[in-house]
Length: 230
Length: 230
Image (cartoon, rainbow over all chains, first blue to last red):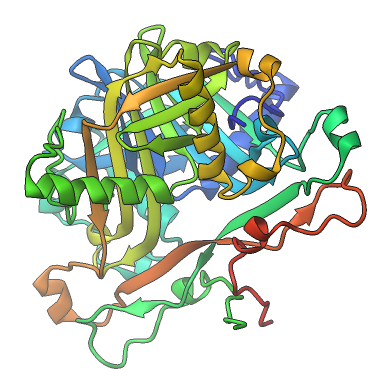
């Protein structure tokens, strides 16, 4: 029933798992990690605040082996992460697994859990690139058609980098795995109810002037389904 | 751009916020907390493992002022939470906010962040009820038509309880909040691209015998839309 007690990705879920990039399995796992991260909209950042863990949702971006986070320089929470160990999780729920027995209910999901040290990025070019990547991660194709950060905005923004070396990926897919006794007994429906995220029709801002068309990068994102049938 | 630097729920996001249930605002906030929690499918649990934070996705259930988690008794990660401070976040992404300036991009979201101590539940009746609530949270209406946990399954399952007293709720909704200069300059589309989760058509398990209909609780859940238009 727990999302983490069923099928596991080859990467073992032991504490402090390290992706060994030199091994073949490492390459597979690394591709799986990138796939989970690149498909995510937000991550959950775990850090220590006053000695206790706190989990905060935030957006992110990735460049190669580095994950970037950003926040206001006034945000005490994120500031507390600098030069400390943190953890970042990105999870996609793909469906709910209905089983014949309560304890075999499960979820289909893809998740990545990263552990590492948050480092404050101070290099101006890297900060610029990190912010571009974070915006493009959320809104692919938008960066080039909007106003870039100005000096004041940059001064108010803190960028953190986390190395992706230490990470684990877990995936569960497929139907329920019921006990043979429950299957033999029969009479109970079992299967998967798939879940997915869909983008709806864009809603123009109330203060948008007339004559501005929805940009191609926004149009391209709208999920091509969703006509009510009833 | 950060999911936490824009509109805030009345509950202030200061560290270790406590919901004061005796105040009127406390009641409002408490209702908002329940709403975010009850609408969620999974939470992200932050705990300390070997002195460093780890964030793990897991399912949960709620009874009044108590949030329940469960795991295998063999799961070292969750065991490490017992009698320790933890944090739990539940986040819903409702849309992406496209602004005229990169630093004003944002997300519409509802999130709850809980901090508290994880307590091992040992009372048999409370353990039973917690597992029922966790399964019903994921799959409403399913518990009564599936096989309940047997003695062996119960022995292999650990249930944790977390008090909901210390929690904050944050909500961002609505369009972009651009600088007046960028609005005056014009020429850039701004608005919201809504995002939602939809349940697809149920997929019967490959080992399901013939003649078993999809139960009403599963049918009722399928999102009544989703016919491809192209």
